Amino acid sequence: MVLVADSREYLVCFMSFRMEHLHKAVWSSNFIAPCMHRSYLCKALFYKLAMLTASEGISMEQLRTETSRLWDTWGYSESDRGALSSFLNK
Image: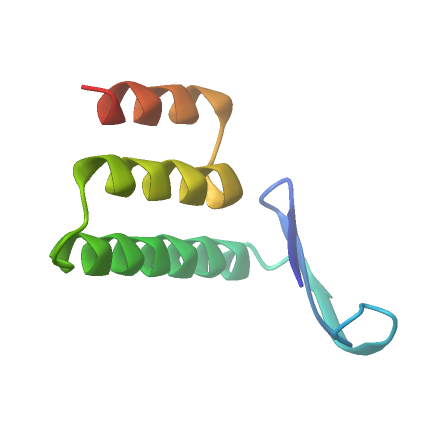
């Protein structure tokens, strides 16, 4: 699990599958780590969308649906979500 609080502190922990046992954890106020984590997520999302775009037989509607689903899970703020929605519905 990764938790970023106020973009200033973060917690990274490794827990059991059912989240009953904590194996290891790190809590830090190092501002670089949350930035790196967010950058990794953006790169992973871009890679996923690039692979979908390159797939044969995927429709624009399927791509829009998957982009919206990913944004709902990993996206930023409400105003950013509105801008993405406007872009996807053009």
